[in-house]
Each structure stands twice: as C-alpha cells, then as structure tokens.
Image 1 (cartoon, rainbow, N blue to C red):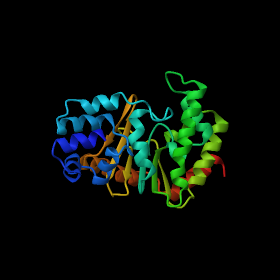
Image 2: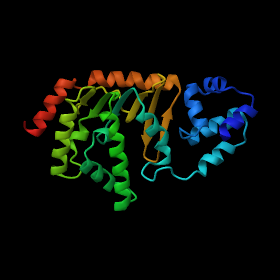
Image 3: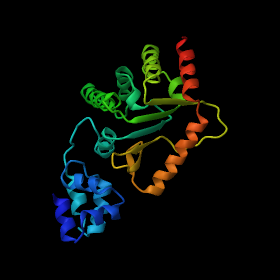
Image 4: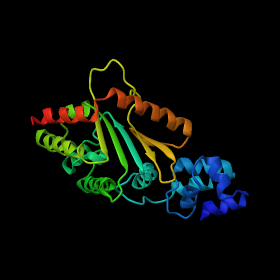
Length: 256
C-alpha cells in the first residue's frame, strides 16, 4: 500500500508508472497490493521516479525473509517462474534446478560455501522440489533447457547419485512440453560464454530474463537486454545437439 500511496502523491496513474518502468500494469498492481515482492532494485528505481528519497529502498531492506528457503534476491524470479507461459534455461555448471533429483539437490547444497546446516539444506531442497511442480501442473509452461555437457561429466554426489540423476534427466526428455539439448564440449564457437541465464514469458506476455552470480542475481526487464539474451539462447539451441541426439547421448551415458 505504501507504493500506491507514493504513486498517487507523485501524480502518476498505474498505467503511466508501469509504462515508465517498462512493466505491465497488472504487475505494478500486484506489487502495490503485496501479491508480488518488491525487489531492492525495483524499489531503488521507484524511489528515483517518485522522488521518495529512499523510502521504498529502506522499507524493502528491512523486510524479513518471506521464506527461509528462498534467498531475498531470488524472490521475484521464483514468483514469476510459478506463472510463466514459457521457460528457457541455459546452464553450464550445474543441472537446472527444475530437472534435479532430490539426491542431486542435496549434493549441490552440501558443496555450498559457507557450509549449510542440515536444516538449511532441507529447507532449500523442499523449496526446490516445490518449484518443480510448475512442470507437473495442468497447463505447464513450454520448457526448453540447453545444458553444457560439463554438467553431465561432473559426478556431483558420486556415481550412484549421478546415475539416478541421468536416468531422471532421460525420463524428463520424453515428457511432452519439455525440450532438453546438450551443448557438447570442445566447441570452437559458443554463444553462452558469459554464463547461465533463464528467459521467461509471463501471462501478460512480458519477456524477462534472470541471471545469477556468485553473490546475487540480476532480473532483466529492459526489452533490449532481454532481446540480446533471447538471441544468445537461439544461437545456443542451434549449436547444441537436437533433442533426439541428446536422448541418444543420455542413453549412451547410461549404457542403454
């Protein structure tokens, strides 16, 4: 409600402010009503536009974690992911969270630094399993994954965990609506050298992108920035094995 108050005082309609922010009016309404988290970056931008002298930034900075299993910096992405119409992910270090087995998740979280407690690991595993429900819904998003072969070569968690993870990945490759492609090692050209990222299309047909770093994340709303990543993703798909070739590779890895 604070955001709505500042908007009205500044003399903006929802439509005007949404256009300035390059977001949909429905998304702005969700933020004003508290149904969608206001990120720190968005709060800073709103403070600048509405001339609120940092009031929204301070409010967001002092909010408690909504879910201990989800870092604050990822909250906006998790919310958008739940309702996405289309989801495209390029990963080069670890398998996509939406395709991980429970054992693989635990192995990944146990490699985190600083070391997580068993309770923290379980929180994060539970949250990630909850996220995977988007692929099992009545109307799941069209999901595309391009993954580096490096994620298949590494045996995170050991041989048994790796084999069950590869079998799960192979099963996912046969699910309607899910497309998996492997980008082989040893390439002479590569469209994803700047690192992993995710592209989303919302029910309002907004196109957004998300990228994580070692200590935070970046949500990209700017159409030009999203367009650049979309073009990179298209190039990655053309450079990767096609879905049938990928299934063949997984079968060979499994010895089947």
